[in-house]
Image 1: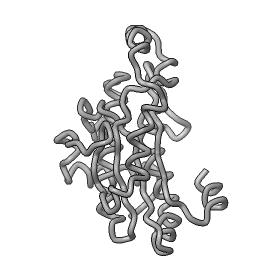
Image 2: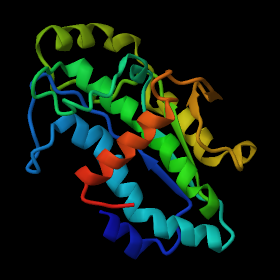
Image 3: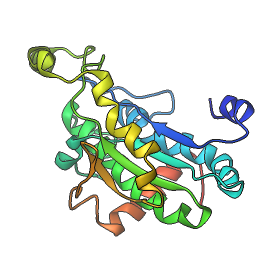
Image 4: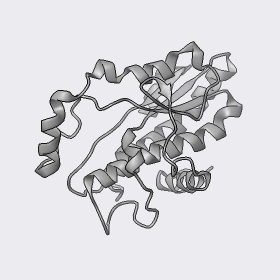
Length: 213
């Protein structure tokens, strides 16, 4: 996909990473990585790194490119278990999802430090609890609970507002390394703000996607 984007877009002004799925059973990808972590976190990492040079070229041409990582308020419940990232010893759907969304926030902060000198901004957002296809694949108690709250979820149009604001607002020129909710900056979890955890996750994530740097 990154190759197709590079071929189609000589310049890239906005990259919005938006993936979120939850799985009630532990499964792994063909690479042997737990599926939630692979999709919800490592997908952001790999696609972003593959497109960084295109974003940097846009900045060199006078653009002000922005990266927006769609995270979740679920990250407040998350914890990065470096000894069991894939949940091989202990797996729970919400536990895996919260860990991955915390990964989005940690990645954003570590990324923002590295790309500020290249003229690229990176922020993350909580879109709200949105009525999409999320969790329709789950069963059991979680699936039942999600179906009960579905009538109270916000529309996709409303859920996109914070991402669009952070991606396009002139008021946010130069703003980077922040977490937004409901269109406004918000303090993320204490673990997400731990620079040592950010840097450790950066290294581990790059190893998992086969990258260095």
